[in-house]
Length: 287
Ligand code: SAH
Image (cartoon, rainbow, N blue to C red; front, side):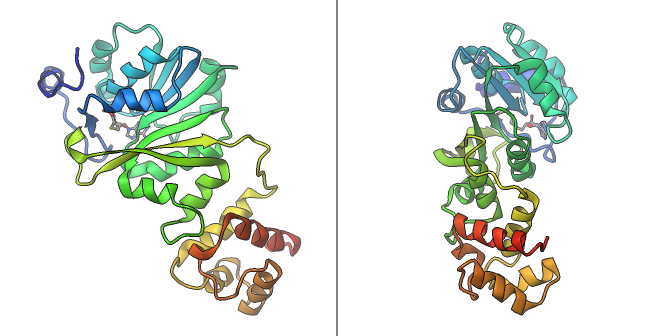
């Protein structure tokens, strides 16, 4: 069954009495060119396994199953189960697990399903938890090669912005710490049912080798980054002083030691500036 055909989708959903949940971010792809492109540019191959998040009716799942050795998909909405039993019936290399991506034990899942295999993540993400999902996957230190995801257009552009530019955010720094992000292509709002209020884009995060930049105290690094961006257009010394409960002249001293002008804003700092500042905090044992 062609899963991007709107009348097929309507009859499938009504036969199963399914109704869309806005709060679960359910917008299903109906543009037939999108899923093949995600699978292709997401690095799928017959010797690769894919982890999908949020199957919907299985339109991307199907494409991944055709191109990959094996697909494990996590879907929170159990009411999609009878639909997926029907749409994915022809595939014996797909397993759908009904659970919450934020709660499931991913290292256990990887051991069980992907042990020793190359794994890519491909998904049309539920937009209400885009950033938490991306950071969760990156922080879990899973053996993943890349993460290729559909996100809201603005979110994608922020993630793919260069660190140290006006568009950058704490998420940009976080993503760049673990990976090299790249915007792949835009997807218009009319490519989904129901149609969301914003356009989307597909991005790919190529995971860095684990020995590239590995800081001893990542919590401290991210605490500094999030402090700096908590008032993103303001000078960083105020929020740093507030978050770490230290005097402003001590912050000024730290910034000087890290070679960062005291009037800097978060959007002016490059990755190596955040790292230098982190090292000064570490040396001074301010956590
Ligand atoms: N991949 C499908 C569906 C995308 S919509 C398509 O492109 O057509 C997003 C999907 O994510 C929905 O099926 C929704 O139920 C699911 N989802 C939402 N929150 C989730 C969570 N926390 N864990 C796993 N899946 C989730």
